[in-house]
Image (cartoon, rainbow, N blue to C red; front, side):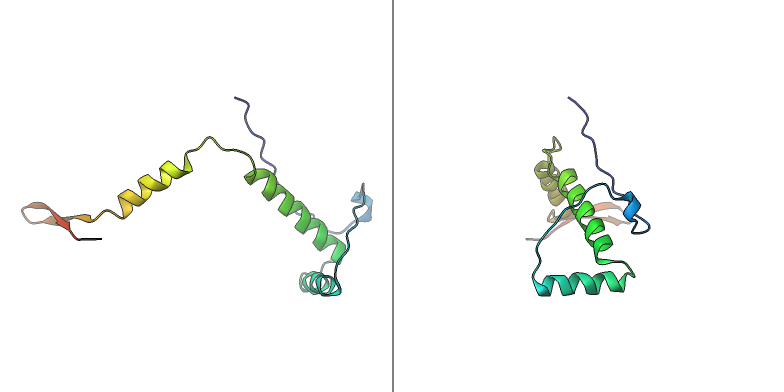
Length: 104
């Protein structure tokens, strides 16, 4: 089976037109535009820089988590839950270990 490639995103340090190789366009409501401008201002970024960083980070997240996995997450969750939520508790006493049970 081929190894899956993970996408790693490193945020750009500065907003540079020289780095730009293509343009994407989108339509926003006035409320969305204001929110983006406010967030960009809080980071001392331009709106374009914020949009580029956010879009690339989100795209990498989707690519990295959207692939099928061979890891049995359901089985691992069941085993973890059964070990951490068991109605038995072992307590060390002077004479050895004592098993204490309580109803769940």
